[in-house]
Image (cartoon, rainbow, N blue to C red):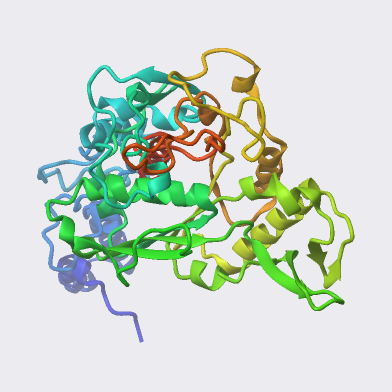
Length: 477
């Protein structure tokens, strides 16, 4: 059985049959075949090339090709595509459809990103992704923007950091801003920050230096709230040194800012000696007991460092334990290295980098003169940042240990490397103003705090850097 004639050829097939009837009666079979072939040759060639349906008119040009343009190209279609279908000569052989345009990767959107950053955060933030925001200098604030909140306006600052309320009279230390080399930080926007953490848990984990930063963050975000009552500690706790866990809820944003105390990130414990007395120990191969709380956070800001520099930790005698073995003597720096590796392993095994952001805040400089915190060291009377000297270039071994550990981790960690920017600020410590002075009572000068920071003050800049980190993360995505 002969195959069916394609619908588009039916009119020509009918002509062939008409010719065949005449041909049988008057011409030879060979003449008949010649005539049919001639008719087929005269038929429009576009039948062979067109993608038209069987019902289409042969005089209509083929439908336009659809091109998917790569990102960053113009929206106009390629010039080979006709905007308005035109009638063509049916006896003219049309060209084949043009080949598809090769794929072109999107062009870098640096200018577009910079424009977006500028629109959202002002011209200050342009170029932030192109420089190291931790290298720079402190500049005097000539615009009157600093401090970002008034000294007596925030009820969440621990007494130890309320320097102005405790009698400090100079205030120039409040009027400096951190300026990175080659770029500007985005202006801190508490409302935008809260939007970025909407529905999330931001948790600070570490020692009292991280509590210092935690309190700064509470004050910065509180400034953005029209109704301050919409921010509260969920269990009604007041911030004190004795308590190691706080949860502050921002009701309108369904988010929390929390603090979990962990001096070493490794596990503290006690052992009972032969005389029945208890002695503290530090298991440098085990994570801190508070780690069960860390898992629930979306953004984690860690630190440790100052507790490794003095007392039993620095002496290392019958204190460090590893694999159930208590070392009679162990070097504190080596113990620190092992504890940081323990922390890194925990992060790698328990954090989902697609859902959680990990930040490690670097070591914060202390500025004791003439002794240490417990041996007569002082910083009273310092009123300006350090401008020159070896101190500005000092970089503790602990930071090199942290950097090396982060490089070896699988989960990405943002290193908030505030060490060098704090080297400058010998003027920002509480000094003798870490306690409220009762009227008629003299300020004690026996023990000064040259490690922590007054609030408002230097930790506000650390939180500006966290905000810059969130802005950078958005543009990378």
